[in-house]
Figure 1: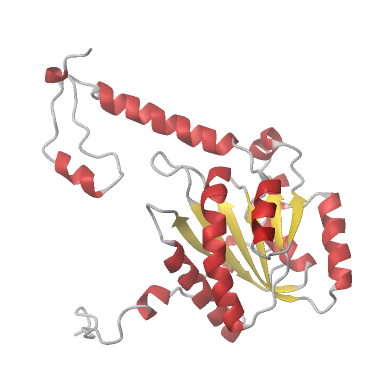
Figure 2: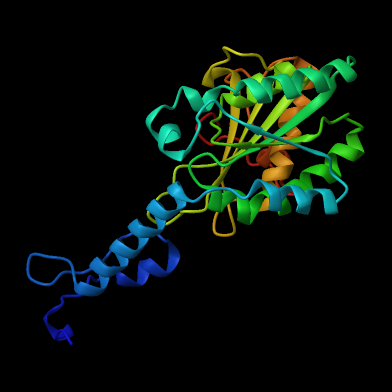
Length: 268
């Protein structure tokens, strides 16, 4: 056993109770203490595992169908995980079989939809497995209240954010919401991201999308993420746009109306 008396603690150590960030780790000589180094290596291994973990779309489809939700299973043009990580461009487009599947479905539903929801593994299938279903349940509650028509939920393997725009375009959807596993961090291997686009089509850029990030138990709650997304969708329908021109004011609007309005002290 190493002699822990050689480790020098950091006086800010108590702040670690308030954040998962790696602060106040202390030192042993000119290096990190053994415990801190082992913890870092464990977190790094978790992040690597999250990137390479495959998404079980069959199981997720069964779970969604048990909730009464229709699904379509699709794939990107990246044939496997290795190619997906080496060729980001292939993860942004559907393969030929998926394009045909969506085209056949769209031919039977020529009127299109108000909303298409796409769930893709992204860079963390772990995030999708843990958070997609409970988040989707909260989103569905609001969709029903607003009366939006929704396409079958599309489950995509080896998918990246921009692929959602192609799905939305093929399904003739007015809006598309992409739920995707975000790049794992050393304290967040299971972070889920939401990307929203109004009038989706191939060629849209990040400037045309709105992002809600870090949806997980230790980050943004399911309820607040769903609240912010629905606010963006309502505003997008009213203004017929999304992206940098559509500001996320949902948190501001969710504050208690009875709270005193202090205004901006810099402008006072």
